[in-house]
Structure formats: structure tokens, C-alpha cells
Image (cartoon, rainbow, N blue to C red; front, side):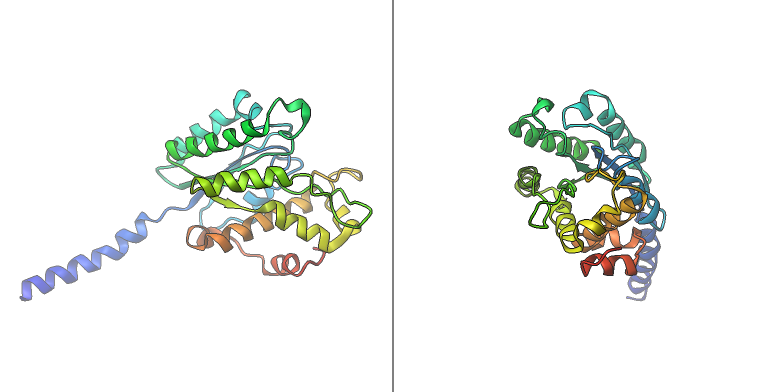
Length: 247
């Protein structure tokens, strides 16, 4: 009996450090159009301002990208290659956010193709050893005469959510939360996030910080066990956003 108890205590003592060593930080791969990309999107600020405890990543967002051109141009190949490179040392997550360019008549991407392309991206991330997160497209900030932004990405939002829910894929609703936020603060305050004075789609540096905080807060709120330990909180900014006040 003494020997059995000793062996149990010894195995228990080993379990804790082994479990700790098994925990891996998060590596983020960001796939998307210009509203994710450097120089106009939320992606760079997400990596530089919201990550902690060894989490890091790379922003592959590409200006003008559709779910078709992102693959055809070779960006998607780089994402999949990076999953293979980093999965042994990190839990690799890939955000997938498209819609702004897919919806244009000149894109050559039908709604059915948009849906199929999102699903294929997610499946390929999983097959490569990563975990996909579908992100509904960041709202445009085009205000109408009624003082509210035009909901001109509602179809793409619905499709993204449907793909995620129908296939058990992680997702966050950036579209509705960003839309609600800019509606709450109004046109004048929203204009301070514009990349250029009349650019109501892309983000300047501070806009990237604000909207990447929305992305980060949504991820932590919905999937705390995966992301909370590897996220740098900003209680002040998060509180302003949640209260619908200009940041």
C-alpha cells in the first residue's frame, strides 16, 4: 500500500509541470482585405497592441483582395505554409475576414462562391494543423441622412455567420459590433478614424488600435480559455467602446 501511494504521489507531482510545458502561446495569421491589411486595417495594431505572454503573429491582409484573388495571388499559400512552420511551437489561429471586395460587381465572385471560398479557407486551415476563425467584415462608416451608417455588408455578414455555424467553425461578429459602435459615437467622432478625410472604409493608426481592440475583446469574450492568457487588456479603451463613447 505504501509503495502504491508513493507512486501515485510521484505521478501527481509530475503531472503539473508537464501540463505547464504543454501549454503553447498563440500565433496569429491574419487573412483578409484592406480592412485587415497594413496601412488601412486593424491587423497590424492587433498584433502590436493586443497580444501578450509570447503570443505573436503575421498580418497577411492584402488591399483589394477577394476570397478568390487572395488565393490566386499566392497570399493564401503563405498562410498555409506558416501554419506548418509554427504549429509545433504555437497554437496557430487564422482569422479570415473578407467581403468588401467580393461584393463588388467587378469582383467575379458570386455569393455562392464567396460562401464556398470561406468554407474552403477554413477547412484548409484545419487540415494544415491550425484553427480558423471567421470574422464578419468590418463595417464601412458611410453615414446616411438618418445619422446611421449604411448596412451595406449585411449579406456578407449573414453568409459568414452561416458558414461558421453550419460547420462548427469559430467566429466573431466584427461587423455588427463595429457598426453599433460607430452609430453610437456618430459621424464626427467616427471621422477621426478615417485613413484620409473622405475615406470612410479604411483606418488610420489610431483607428486600427480602436477596432483591433474590438476584435480582441470579441475573441476573449467568446473564447476566454483560448485567448485570455495571451491577450493584453486595455480596460480604459474597452470601457469606452462598450459604453459607445468616442475613444
